[in-house]
Length: 237
Image 1: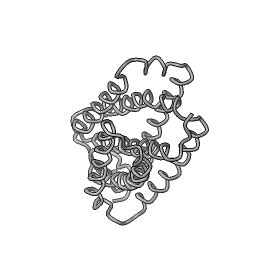
Image 2: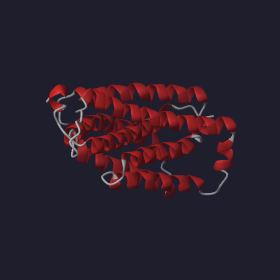
Image 3: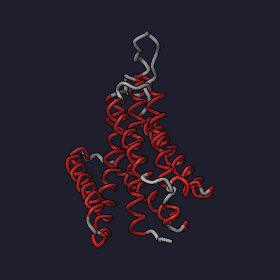
């Protein structure tokens, strides 16, 4: 179905609904992702430059409070994506990006600014390459799902264990694994945009919400890739 043929689709109220081409739908999804990243790094930089980061993290357990808040937002958006409005979905996405910006302000205290800029650039390059691979490849990357989910659980368990045991000697190896996993996730989640586009091509509202959800997944891929690269390549103050 091309764009002109698809315009023959009529919505429930008899109004004409334009079928959005895949390239435009994908561009909008990445646009939301980049907007989220921009908000995150703007908040992080503002917190560092103004010194607010010192006041925020002077509060005991603040890192746990922020982490739980982020988890609640992601879980709510993931489980309620079919029920919430487009506006609420976008609001939740930017709420997560804002909360993550507060968390990321701490990285300006831990790492030298040139190092952060370098790693951000490296992340953008690697992310862009794998996103392009995911978009153009004809291979079915959905077959990687079980492997990726299992690897994600392994990484989570390692960092939880690191709270109770000294596992620093394994950190570089685990971070290298993390880089590899989130490079694969980037290609996998990029290809999923096509699935969302095909599944909701005749449901404009759900298509918009799926685009936001896909943007969140790609946002998380970029952020995690950045963190793992920073742990390997970053220069601490």
